Amino acid sequence: MPTLLRRSASFPLLALLLLTPPTVHAQGSSEVQDYLVSVNRLYEDLEYERALEQIHRARRLARGVEEDVALGLYEGILLDELGKQDDATAAFKTALFLRPEAKLPVQVSPKVEQHFESVRAGVKRELAPILARREAERRQAQPAPPRDVRPPGTGEVSATHGDTRSRALLPGIAGGVLLAAGGVSYGLSRVELSRLRTDDAGLVTRADAHDSASRGKTYQAVGLGLLGAGVVGLGAATGLYLLGSPTEPVALGVSTDGTSAFVYGRWP
Image (cartoon, rainbow, N blue to C red):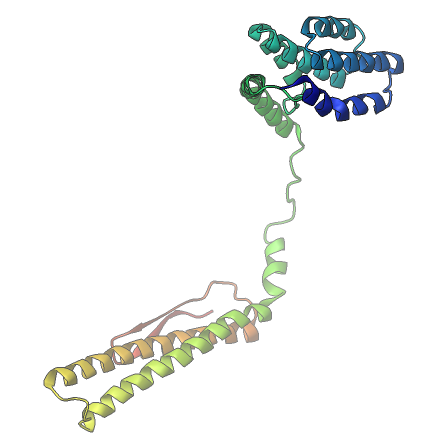
């Protein structure tokens, strides 16, 4: 990348460094920021060795994590540009162990960027078990939720008797829908029976008559089954609405033999 373009890209960073307010250690932080500005300028001028010297001087004055991260990132970039990849890896690790999501402070070549991201991936793999263990220790240190010390059955009484009428709505709606569907299906069976009795003109062959009779039986069986299920639903809704929540569960079922529907089971 031409030097002029790299310098122009660094102007926002220079402004940020110059405008960064002092931290608790005002004097040390101010001097470190001055060094970082110098390092940035020397890097843009391709003076990598001199920039490294400034990094080493600034390290003696660093007073916080952010300054250590910035110095480590710059040092890794400069060492990478000088072809010292092992030293660059160590410098990048120093910064990334403090801030795994840190970003490079200047625009770099694709080669340096790729190296930096590979070091970041390795750091995250090394930190993963440590962070997982810390999270497990944190969860174990949390106080256990308070146990329910109420007498047995106290909670169940208030939960089962307070809202039985509202719970009757669902089986009531389901029962009504099933009754309607059963009525339609049973009505269709009557239509097929009427066609057979009146010798409908659409029944030309014996096969047509057989198919009509088969459909009629199917409609009748389905209709009776749905009607029975609808009766069960309405019965359950009525019981919940009038009698309150039962102390024992309702166990009702419906079956059909093709011509009749049977409701069986236990009602509280």
